[in-house]
Length: 146
Image (cartoon, rainbow, N blue to C red):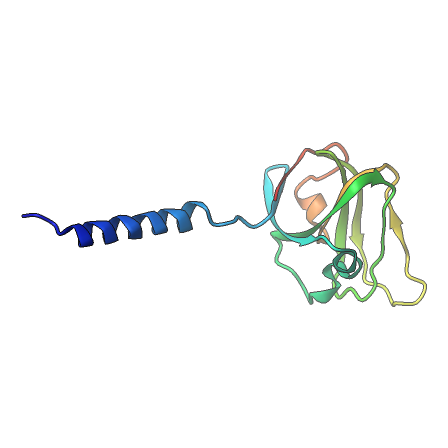
């Protein structure tokens, strides 16, 4: 039995479209530290970086927000308008260089500022307590997939 060329061509096109959607679909940014993978929100613009995780009431335990900077420097973070405590992880290259654990929610007056003691080019914010739970500390290797 011969298959008409039209049906064969349509079948080939459908297979190609399926393969493209399956394998070329953009992957969500992720971060891996000590074998634990976090799905990441990406704070790219200065406005997104200023707001950070404050626009969320909470995030899942396997989520975080990554801040990418053009140069390595002593960056500072605060908890303005935050609704839940976090851990702040400062990263240089692919190594953790500083960690602030269980940073509490603060009133918006006289906000404490958390500044890395070592230059960093990335900062990862995750739920409070997870750096301890997963053994994330200064010197831990970081693999970021954007």
